Length: 441
Ligand SMILES: [Zn+2]
View 1 (cartoon, rainbow, N blue to C red):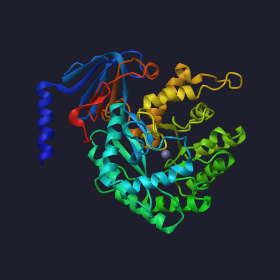
View 2: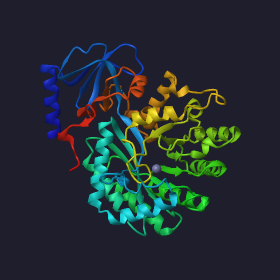
View 3: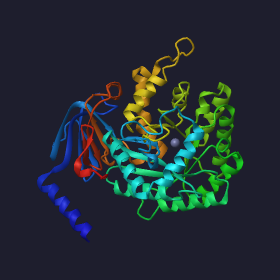
View 4: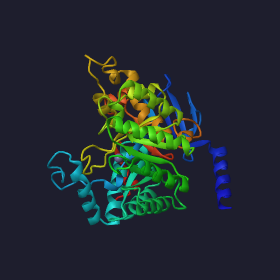
C-alpha cells in the first residue's frame, strides 16, 4: 500500500513539475560522436537525448567529457585487503614473492584476524574501488575447514550488505584441497551463507588449480561441479598452472562444463597457460571457450606480456579484467583502480617489434578501446549482468563522469573521476567518496 502511494505521488510530482532527479548535460558516450543529455530518475537512466527538455533537481554540466558505465572489477580478494599494510613500510614485503611463504603467512594472518577486522578492511577496499569508479565487483573469498573456517565469508558478506548502496558484489568462496569431504561441505556452507535470503546474487563456486594446488585434476573438477550443480550456482576458478598442464586443465574444464550443461556459467581466472601454448593448442582452446561460452578473466598485476588478449577478443571470447588488488601479501601495490589497470595492461602488452606483428597495438585507439571494453562491457558479460549494464535508457544509473572526452584519453591521462553515481545517487566526487556514503570507520 505504502509503495502505491509513493508511486502515485511520484507520478503527480512529475506531471506538475516535470523534473528529473539529475541531468548530466553535454556528455560524450563511448559510441557516439555528438554529445547528449542523460536524465536520471528513481535510480534509473530515464532518458538519453540530444537535448533533454525537462529540468532536474540537480543539473551537472559535463561539458563535452565522457560519461561511462561504472567499472566492473571482475577479480578481487577483498577478504585479504590491506593485509600488507604496515604503518611505515608494507609488511611481509621484504623479499620477492615466494608462493611457499605466502600460503602459511595467509593462514597465520587469518588466524589472528577477527571477523570485525576483516569486515572493516573489506569496507575500506570497497570505498577505494568505488571512488575510482567501480560499481560492480566479483570477489574471491578463502574458506578453510581446518583453520579459519567461514570467518572470511561472514566478513565479506557483511561488508557487501553494508556497502549495498555503493556497489554490487558477487562472492566466490574458494576452498583449498577441495576433493576432501570436509572441504566440499565447507564450500556448501559458504555458498549458503553468502547467498542468504537478502542477497541479490547467489555466490559462486571458486577454487584453485586442480593440478598444481589440488594434485588431482579429475577429483577436483568433479568436486567443484558437484557443489555447483547441487547449489545451482556458477563457477569462477583460478587456473594458474602454466604450459600444457594448464592447457590440459582448461580442456577438462570445458568437458565438465559441457557435460553438466554449464555453458555461460563458468569463468576461468588468469589462465597463464594461454601465453605459453603453441597456436594449434591455443586455437583449439579458443574454439572450446566459444562453444561453452566460458569467460576468461585476466588481471593487470599478473597478465603475462605474451597473453593473447587481442586474439581472444577478436575471437569473441569474453575476456574481462580484474585488479586483483587489495594491497595484500600477494599484491601489495595498486589502488583497486580499473583505469590504472587498463594503462598498465597497455604497457605490459606492448609486444616486441622484432617478433610480434601487433607491436604496440594496445597503444592504438582501437587497442585502448578494447582495454576499456574489458573493464566495462566484457566484465558485465563475465558477471552475467549485461542485460542491466551500460549507458542505456532503463538501466540502473551506475555511471562515471570523467574529465576527459573519450575512453582513450581517460586511460592515457588517468582521468579524474569527477562523479561516480550508483543507482542514480552521486556517491563520490573527484576521486573521493562523499563522507555521507562512507561505510568504514
Ligand atoms: Zn585471485
